[in-house]
Amino acid sequence: MDPQAEGSRGRLLQQNQDEGEDQKDRRRESEDIDAIESQSKPLLTPVQTHDSIDVYEGTEEEEPPKDSVKWWKRPSILMLLPPFILYAIALGAAAVPRVNLVLTLVCQDYLNRKEREVNNGDFTPIKLVIGVDNPECEIPEIGAKAATFTLYMNIITGILSAMTSPRLGQYSDRIGRRKLLIFGSLGACLSDATLILCLKYSDHLSYWWLLLASTFEGMVGAFTLILAVVHSYASDCTTFAKRSSAFSLFHGCLFFGIAVGPAIGGFVIEKTNDIAVVFCGVIAIHGLFISYILFFLPESLSKEKMKLAKEKFAEERRKSADSSTWLSSFMKIVNVFEPLNVLWPKEGGNLTKLRANMVLLAAIDFIMFGVGFGSITVILLYSKVEFHWTTKFASYYTSFVNASRVIGLFVILPTLTKFFRRKPPPGTPAGGCDYLDTLIIRGALTTEVLGTLFFVAARDTPLFMAGGIVASFGGLGSPTIQSSLTKHSPSEKTGQLLGVIALLHSLARVIGPTVFNGIYSKTAKTYPQAVFIVLVALFMVAWLGAWFITPHVAVDGVGDEAVERLFAEERGELDESEPLVGRN
Image 1: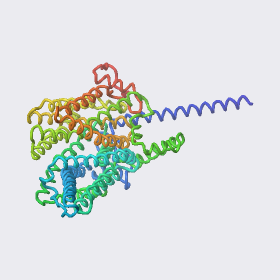
Image 2: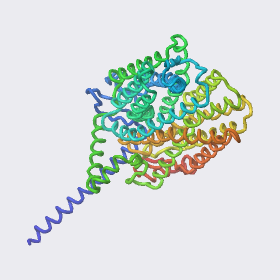
Image 3: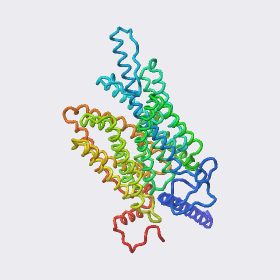
Image 4: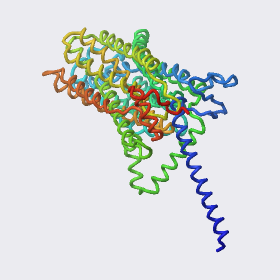
């Protein structure tokens, strides 16, 4: 071969190799920039979202351009808050009538069976007034049957929701948040319509048809999926620094609805003497919610974001199909716990710390939600037996505790975020949760422990109520935990991640009531405070776990040295003479 030609060929190969290295460097630099910008910009991109509407994308310090679209056409948490408040009120308004409906229908069936046995099948069906107190139903046998049937309803809803929530959450990353919000609300409408049918035709339909309402509710993921999709929408619209405040607003609205809704429902029943009116009103609210989402709420995900999520999902499916058999593929579909893999990332840097943080945060949230949901019934039963609370006084206590929680979420958490959260220096990569997040989580768990200890020690109403108020400020933990989790995951997996949290919440709403009601029933005669000691032990486990959360873990493993600098700066260990990260 000609030496000159061979030399030219070698130079050409070297040039191509250099160009390849340059492309890799540019791609790596682009990934670093994307990760850095996620600290100061929302997850929205400066591209078209839907219906050819341009969405402004800017930093917190920048002002939108004069020719930007109108504010009502831009995705914002303020656009979603009003309909979500209505949804929360509807959720609260239906809670007490639903329990009353179950108790009365079970009681009616029980009394009819007894009447049939006494008269050898010749009897006139008993028609109880649903929505008022029926003295005939205040016997242990009926109470036990109603409690067991309510547990069946919770199990069906919880299991189905656990199966559907993570997949629907992941689906929202590919088709947008609005469609999933509409789908979830339609399922709630079907559930409430089934309750109305069972109420109106109780002579022809057994109360076991109420399980169909639980089935409809579980198939759409129940309220846990709605909350997860709402949080996904908020994640799309907010920066890392403001995400916990955004989540706290939605949690505050949820507890506000739970506090105000029952009072509205009770007022309607008192004026109409018809419990069906409440469920019809709830369906009407869902109709307003769906109409608002359909015609007014802008989509938070851009077409490019959804396209990227679809491409990554298709790539994962191809890899899975290449390396698995039909049996393993089928098992992945039916395996409820398979979506939990999102908490155990397989790529990127800092995998050990990243995985530990995600698992710890999810476990702490599971404990807090499970204890909170599962202990409600126990607390009300305990107070009625030990302190002889009336239903009216118990309602006041519930409203008071929820009001304290709302104050914490609407006032305390946003104030802490505004005055104590430091802006990341220019050039800092996306670094997971920060010191303020970890302090809020530990503080929330501390108040839960103290409040529950008050329950153990209380022998009168004032101390018991004080325990409830102290424990209510533990509500600051859940939005902070969930926002922290989103900081450990790529933006295209936000819906999938929060869908997994909905899965854990669905399991918790089954496990929590079953365990705590069982403990209380076994110890009510000997030592009724035993269940609260178990609650303290669980909160202490979560509190200890919170101390192993590592702040500033880079999401994609980029810029680890910059993260360590920020870590040292917050501890006051950074030499002030050195230039800040990212400044040239």
